[in-house]
Image (cartoon, rainbow, N blue to C red; front, top):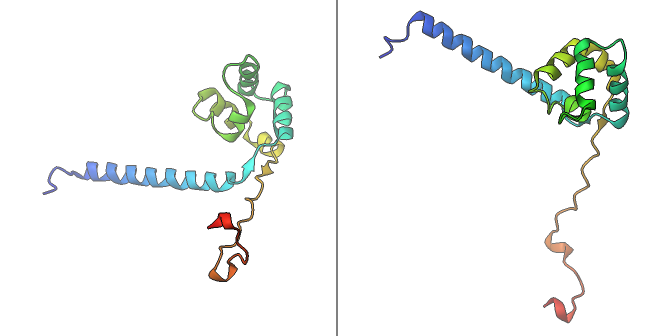
Length: 133
């Protein structure tokens, strides 16, 4: 019984489903781009210098002032996206996106340590001490 589902409600459901799917695709694409990349100390230094320069947008300069005052934010949080919930951070990043992309090279995360091969029955130790049993 779907009599309550008017064409307007169906259209709204379709619109919402498409918006959610598009948001999920955007998040996955962003996650793929960021995987293994971490802003280096040199990247942070370059962004700090840019934020203090006259080339930066007013929002970026406000953000630099706020971070310098110790408002609970760091440049590392801003550049890794941890502070993406803050409207000033979003405004500053959107205003200077192209310039930031040039400044941030990123450093790749170190590879995971090699895993030891799994032992098979043939790899049993050949000598045991009395303590081992």
